[in-house]
Amino acid sequence: MSWLHPLHLRRAAASILSGGVIAYPTEGVFGLGCNPLDGDAVRHLLFLKQRSPAKGLILVASDWHQVAPFLAPGQPTRQDLPARPYPVTWLLPASGRYPWLTGDSDRQAVRISDHPQVKALCRLTGLALVSTSANRAGKAAATDRLSVRRAFGSELDYILPGRLGNSCGPSEIRDAVTGKVLRPYQENS
Image 1 (cartoon, helix red, strand yellow):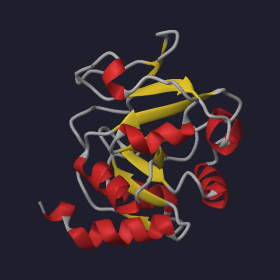
Image 2 (cartoon, rainbow, N blue to C red):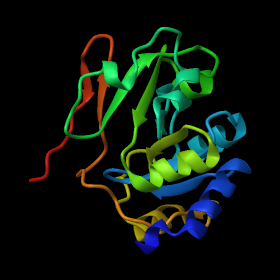
Image 3 (cartoon, rainbow, N blue to C red):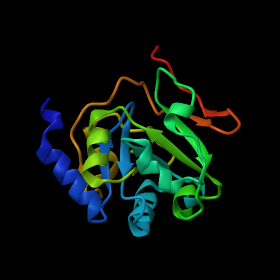
Image 4 (cartoon, rainbow, N blue to C red):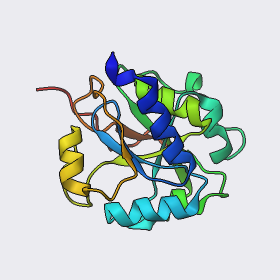
């Protein structure tokens, strides 16, 4: 698995830790990511994507401990949430300490990823990562490195080579408190 080469992962992690914005493969599409604690990096990501800060952002992590600081105390853990056979991004009450991540919402979107590169990046950086689809607002999400390059050119600090997971698009988004599905999972057709 050359796409799991440590050099690529280290370069991507170094870019994140130095305040950069990268693109990387996730379960179903390429994502744009950065350090969620770096407000300047988050603002730059939003600028590149042409996304309103009011919409909020998803965090991905390799384990629940990486997202816990962004959530209000007493939130359920991954084991407390209903299991699904596909990736689910959960909306949970936010800590309120990182408004640049939640936008106009009092919820933080989080997903514990099973994608090997996402997990490796989170472990290398020691962080949950911002994860939003790699596209300009209103355009189709990128599903390969070439699409990312066409959309962003040299504006990104790094594009991590790799393969998408087995999903056919962005993850389902579900409110953990109400159970409401805000974005359904799309089955392969």
